[in-house]
Length: 376
Image 1 (cartoon, rainbow, N blue to C red):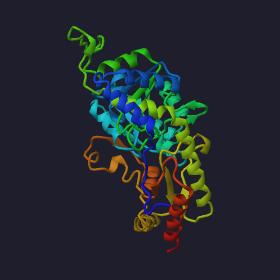
Image 2: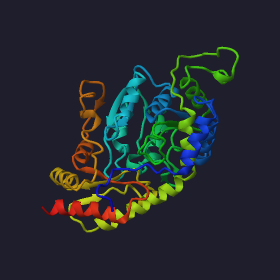
Image 3: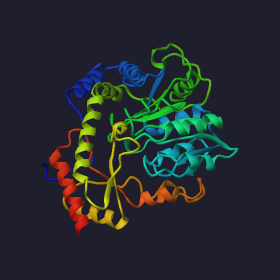
């Protein structure tokens, strides 16, 4: 057992190094190269979708998906406040207004009833988030989207490989955003992707991520390219995609390892008063991008944070406060009603060390620290 336990570790091996060396030593195609094509093909195959388009972050994946769904000025987009701020920021970046709906207390995802209450004539889309690696009530939310002719854009940044009623999350809505940030299930450092079966949405994303260009590969073409819309440069570099390819080959093993670590935590926490692990709607569908627990009180959480810090054990609050209470959104850039579940959970959740291969001894050390704090 190590003296300190980090919040996460990146699961690299020699295949990652070999791919990076291959991409760099080729001496060409560093911006758009064969690893990008291979990674996109691999993602499309993994998810069983027609299109997977890589970009440079999960945030830009969300922005591209929103733009592809023609969300913009004057529109409202229903999002949770209990999520990373990028979910709401992407809505603002396309000129729309985020409308914060409440979450439910099992999966910590959007509450379908709260979403229904938030719909207005200006609503254009719903962005459900699969929190911590657990599927939200995505099928119910997709039905709401269909009933009201709203785009459903899944934020699946934290739930690569999770399933809902037998379907991989990210494949239920109209389009989904993935993230490959360094602490995600499939890490490449930074990076993201948009997945969809819709040809038009895919075409829009492909153009927007590359300056609005709709012609052939710029670097292989004699002419200057054809530009049919305004776009930006959100492309994923080939060397990043090289890491994506090697990580994708082992992602199922990484997910299985995370689930084994979670099971160990759950056994150790069973019977510990004052704390409850987050397992979502069904523990078997959770991929545990984060191992999160909920305490009975905020004071208990603060005591645990102090104890773990003293033991050099990392932990982190995801998220407090909710986005609607941050300085960035208190100034009227969003709209929300009452969010009692969001505000309650924000005061009580804490994420513990979680990564593939975390030892049983380290998990026991973490839980010993929790028990010590709760007994004090």
